[in-house]
Image 1 (cartoon, rainbow, N blue to C red):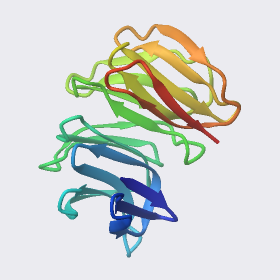
Image 2: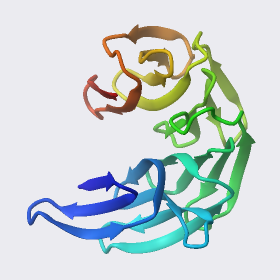
Image 3: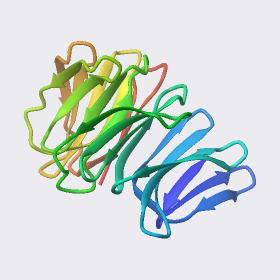
Image 4: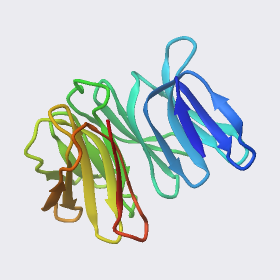
Length: 219
């Protein structure tokens, strides 16, 4: 299991109740996990920003990806081949996680707050859902460059994303003026309703692989 607290990312052995590894100087608000791979933001001793990719089976650093600024959001493709990052200066990158080759780069408006920014690879790994500040939500086919804008009718920041394979729905959580969760068809971008039981900002969303359940965390 993974725990992130006080700028430390920890990998725990829950059966023995002891940490397997603790990594300090973590930055940003997100972790990304795919199989045995873990990616998270790091602030280096000299002040440089990076995203580190670790093998959780042997607790070894595989690669370090340098960035110009702190990373607000991170996503790994389902097979761990691709890494997507959203920096606090608005730079969005999709990178080959093995060769570290930059595959596509975009520039979004600089987020007003560090909570804004969320990304998730959809099951085919060619499409990346990107949530930005100012209510912008879109699905990018990073291979072709085709971009599907999704109307949100808000200027709030997107703070969390989840995709439900059984329903084909993309869920997005928002912050600033209210905490609500919007639902859209991930193929067409058509709205499919909203969830409004939260009164705080949406911090995280998780979907189940084989059920239509959605888990949400607000604060």
